Image (cartoon, rainbow over all chains, first blue to last red; front, side, top):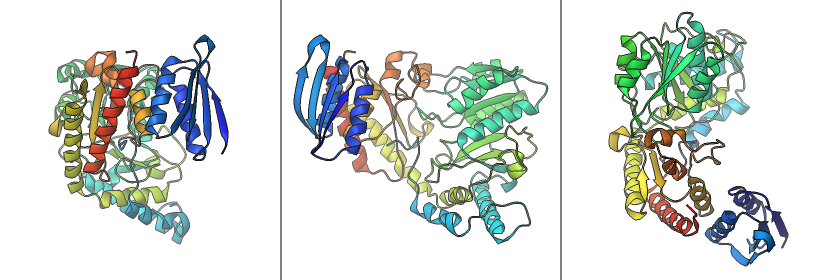
Length: 74
Length: 376
């Protein structure tokens, strides 16, 4: 099981979601992905896409300065 | 459901192409050549004949190019540079980029262009066309619209053009083998045909050039394809294109049309705040559905749908790598919110009723979820 981090801070929707979708295409089932960003719209859409792909959301955390962190398992 | 972007190649087409990659890999050099060259020539001429027959043209009126974009460019720029007298081209606001960008390109060479208005279903305004076409050299437009599926009143367009002796170029990429086209009945001068939208290969297109029409080559390098597309031909692709036309079954078009109507009806009835872009019935391409979902962005819908297994297309800004949302939807709706939330679903013979039901289920879930988190 591998762990990946996508730092999407400073990137606006839809780029963070595109990056998540590209990453999950090449990683293995069971791998963990941590996404960090500060675009509020992306936070909601990434969570929704993870649910749509039937992956497991492990953590959703608000960070300082409007940033956020989502951790999920493929 | 993105079959207006491209289609899956038919297995029979692939089978027909394979020998030209491995055993018969020659390219024709002219009438007299060695065995490999003769085999290639036979394959090309056989496809030319099948394609010509499909539109009631003569084989000598078909030129193979490498893409529909090439065909549009060769026809429009070729006609513009072949004529020394007129400098005006007329087109519409909802054309493909291959046409619109050709007009912008020609502007740098002293040509001017005018864009005809369209109505709210995407039909060219014939009165406006009549006003603009009088001193024109070319009308460059389409038969079936790439985004909203409008099937133009081609006869009315050509009648106006012929009144003023104007060359008519039609991009029939999306309409070819979706609606019957007979060049003896419509007096078109040049016309672009697609291979990869009819389950043929990519990398090849055909340009119909009516006998007697002169085009100046915009790519030079030899006499192949009347000197208009002189690159080494992809014999396999041309053979595949011919096969795709040969095996085309118009019964599939009727099946697709029924699926289209079911999809439209379900989308409009199941998802509140959904609007159909473009016309209905026989005035719409049989495989095209284009809807706008209010209060969501088309791109978000697409990404979420993709995550759930549904592939579609949006003219929405980021997705299409444009700065503005779909110019086609803006031209018919005059409102940005319709363009932002628009998606195109396009069907093929491989789609089923189950696909249609699943697509609506996915889109309903996606649109409702996005609206809950949407700032719009």
